[in-house]
Length: 206
Length: 206
DNA sequence: GCAATATGCTACGGTGGAGTAGCTTTGTCC
DNA sequence: GGACAAAGCTACTCCACCGTAGCATATTGC
Image (cartoon, rainbow over all chains, first blue to last red; front, side, top):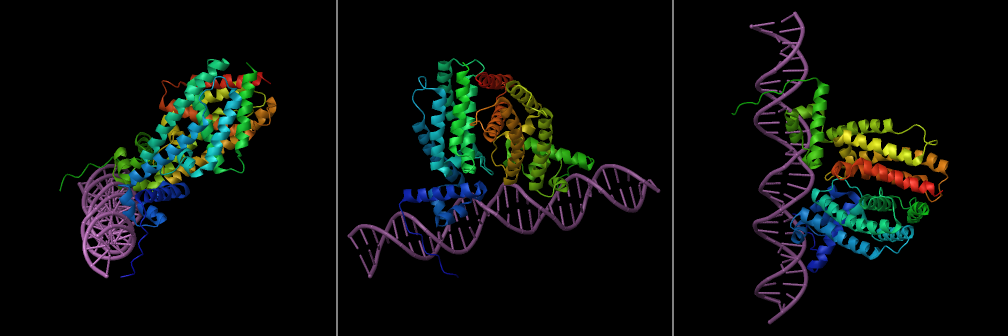
């Protein structure tokens, strides 16, 4: 009978919860979902598996809580960036500014945004569904803003608000992915300058 | 001892391989990777599990062969669409035409393109890696074409070929996803008209 | 029709990881 | 210091699904 391991120090429930979530986040981001076994999370957190089960009823609960936490905080970051009104703003400067701030937020919290925008192997269906739901919320907001802007500049009818919203959200996600995966090569400034130039060109032709 | 099931008819090895791959494709697309157990594939194909193992050494082999088949055929579709030369072409008409043909190909083979562009839950790491590799090939081609086109129109330096290539590939994937998921609302013609209008505007400003 | 062969099926072994019962330790209060 | 409760640990059960050995059947050629 080998020596029994020393007990992990007791900490308040909320602190333990955070610790377990942080451990899971680290594993998701560095090794993917398949590596997030309850054993691995426990080890990463410096406790045993039943302690993890004392916080979350199941693996699915843990992963759901993790994504929920990250999405809540990402949404807060995003809402702090988006302007309340868009109609009186120059579209190219607005897009450039929002993209710059967005990519700054991404770089501030890479693990969080990794969970939200990166394609990932072994992603559980629940995690995937929650990502899609959050994306839909972002899209709705983007479509609202696009309607105001497109009307204000008198854009041609082919540039419908829903397609423009999808386009903008897809391009922001693309930029975030590239900034997360290859920050040396894809500096945020490059995307900001490119979007300013592209929209600027379109406006000059009106 | 219950009645032994009737044997599935013997078919040539190549036909059995195709049958098993088609069964797996159907399951991936309708129910996701997690539903692709060897038992489920066997049932979908109308044979028992050892028959599936007679074709593919393991589950991983099966999934890899499936994606490989779909990617080969998708690449063939894509290469048939892309023009050999781009410099003498009108960029907005070129983009519109290529996008139209691409979305037509997507609609011709929805299951194949579902495997290639849709975000999917439970995607095995190997499958995910193969998707990324194929995407990198497409990106390299797109960057090559972007270089020729941007030089020909004298685009501003902010619109760098690598960023434009990522943008175009991301937008094509976005359009494919929307056409696959909501074909009523997102008719290919809408994307084609939008890209023609957007690039057309930029060119008129030069 | 019979024999040989290739291919199909049943029943099974093995295992990684989800989840938990019961014992042990720690921290707090008196 | 002792009692008690909460929280931590060890050892274990369970099972879905991967993978396969050995038997059964279907097909073909003589």
